[in-house]
Length: 219
Image (spheres, rainbow, N blue to C red):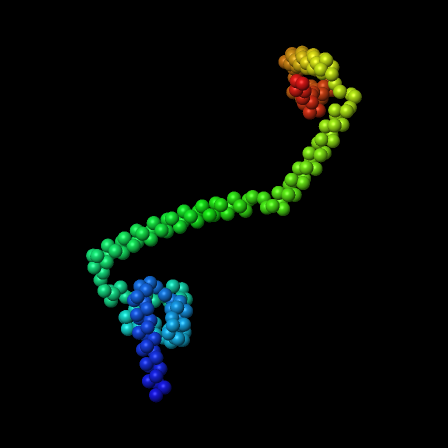
């Protein structure tokens, strides 16, 4: 008696699974099929696995092995052929769903960009902290400006002009003397048997470059 009930239960599970695979017309693993049908039909996992294997052996469904997992799907040759009207309807549905998909993808991109902007924006506490820091900076600069204004040692425009003229004079003199020294040394080195570096070391000449000295910029 028990064997008969098991056989009937197995046949019922096979019928349920065959109808489900044909209606859905997409691949499922035994675990997926069990999860989808367990609540409605009360099928156990062992019964689902056994029924799928039997259906595959009988050639009523197709079986593909991917690594350690088996995938089952309806035999396309056993499904009724669609009419031209049905095919046109499916094409229209595909076009509609494709448009919906593109619209959703575009919406997702907009939301991702908006989310990125929001994540990079400062929060209210951060803004309040930044404002407080800026206020302190402003107070410090204001105090410093007042000290400068109240000082008695300001440079007058005349004094500044005098300093600028003197600086320009010294710059011209610096360039003139350096040019004269360079020309003189080049003339000596024309008849000197050793290198320029050896000559400078023997005579004890130190250049601006040796000490990292450069001509100051004009004020």
